[in-house]
Image 1 (cartoon, rainbow, N blue to C red):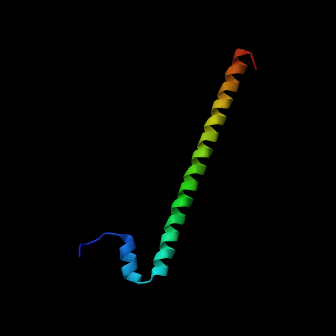
Image 2: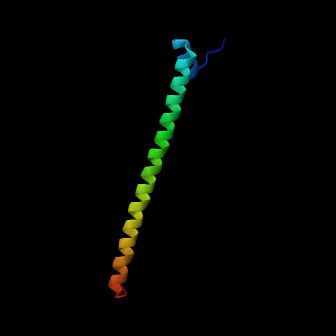
Image 3: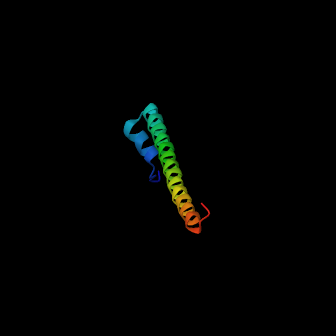
Length: 68
């Protein structure tokens, strides 16, 4: 039998329990989803800060021109 480098196969061989394997799989999927949501929230926050900086810069520019 060829050597298979798979965490799923390794965890099934270690525990020998399909319920444990399913629980680990669900935990892994949940971790990936939470990480994606965290990245999304960080991107939205960064875009919001950039928008505030841009808005304040435009406002200062219009005040400098005397149009504000």
